[in-house]
Every structure is written in C-alpha cells, then in structure tokens.
Length: 88
View 1: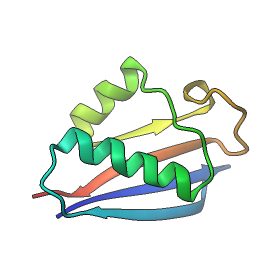
View 2: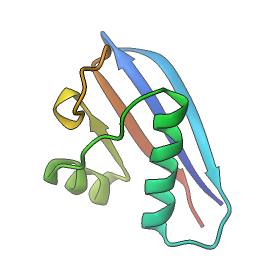
View 3: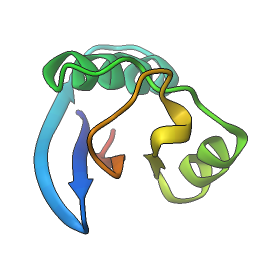
C-alpha cells in the first residue's frame, strides 16, 4: 500500500491534513502525482508546480513543501507539505 500525508500550515500550525491511500499497481511517480491531485481537490487548491528544489527534497527525504512560489494563484496559508509515509 502507498500512503501520502498532506498538511497545510499557517504560522507554524497545521490547519488541515489528509492521508491518501493507493493500492493500485502503478508506478510510484503515478501514485505521487495522483495523490497530489486528490489532495488539491480535497483542499480546493490549484496543482502546485514542481520546482527543482522540490524534486531534490522529495527524492532525498520522500517529502517536500510547496509555498506560494509553487502556486499560480494566491494561497492563504504558508505552505503545503506532502510526505510519503508508507509504500510497498
């Protein structure tokens, strides 16, 4: 099973979170992108843009933060953090 934890932070406080589970036989990349799409739908956000720093953090730590630089529209929080907490 693949699980991704997404959290929204404002002023160093978590204000919203969700866990996305995926049991399909897809590649890890597809699962990450599909989970992020589900997160954005649940939180009513546009999809963030993956910058080089996000890719490097995600490869190294299995987590990354998306700040206002990653979104096209304005956001009313400090950052969205995603973290893979379980995978096969």
